[in-house]
Length: 201
Image 1 (cartoon, rainbow, N blue to C red):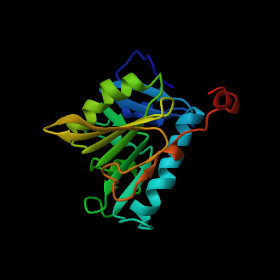
Image 2: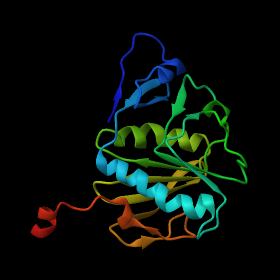
Image 3: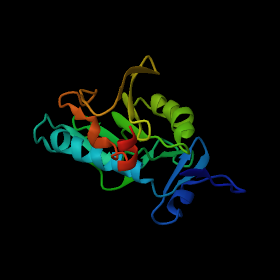
Image 4: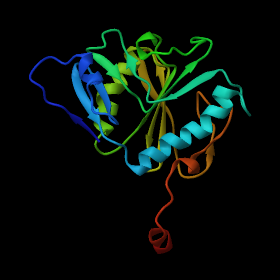
């Protein structure tokens, strides 16, 4: 859950540094947001994406390699007091970022791909506030994953605007850009339905 933290002074990056341990803080267009521990369905997607994407695309095991795949990176877009965003996951092609920096402040190259995992409390922020920032910063690929609806929307940046190029759902395998070299098993992203609900269906 992300909430707007009301403060009676201008937001600065120090507010991010002062965030309580175990929480994720962001500054989106000068507004400070604090993220609580994600719900189980959200955490399942994050973990599953890392398990599925990192071996073939970062390690080169069963896939082409050539990427850095990072959960919850801190993206400081130019003025970190105005825009410090933390997507749920992001990826950089190693041809653009040969070595991953040791400090977030040294990460000056926008990612090639970001993924936001939606929840009822974050969907508006992710769609209305953060998507335009990613477009302005030149991120080429964006996924929006809804773990409750079990859907994955795929966007590409064309002419400075996001274009929805595909939407996936259910439990099948899908080749999804920019990681279409290895099919993604969608069913691995979702928590199983409770047994009583499955039996009722």
